[in-house]
Amino acid sequence: MAQDIDKFNVTNIMLRNSSFGFLIFAIIFMVEFFLDGYSSNYAIFSISCLIISIILVRQSVKFATWFYQSIFQTLIAMLAKPEQMPVKFTPKSKRSKQNED
Image (cartoon, rainbow, N blue to C red; front, side, top):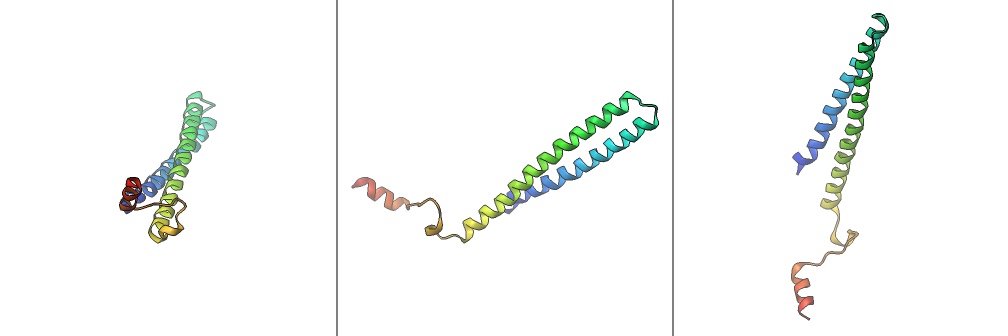
């Protein structure tokens, strides 16, 4: 279970780092755009890298949310008593006896 939860955090960190790399590429291409006489190739590369960076940040936030939600849900499942659960569960043996009546 811990490996499944940790995968969300690993993916979050990986996406943040990739996003930062694409942001640096976007800045470099924008500087080259201004230094190289307003070449349209650098503008296209810069905008593309910026868009990819924004997409990666959004996905990273999603995985971070899943990571913290899964930690919270696991903690609640481990510490909560059946009486504290929002949904009441009845054991199988009691359900089968109720159905027979």
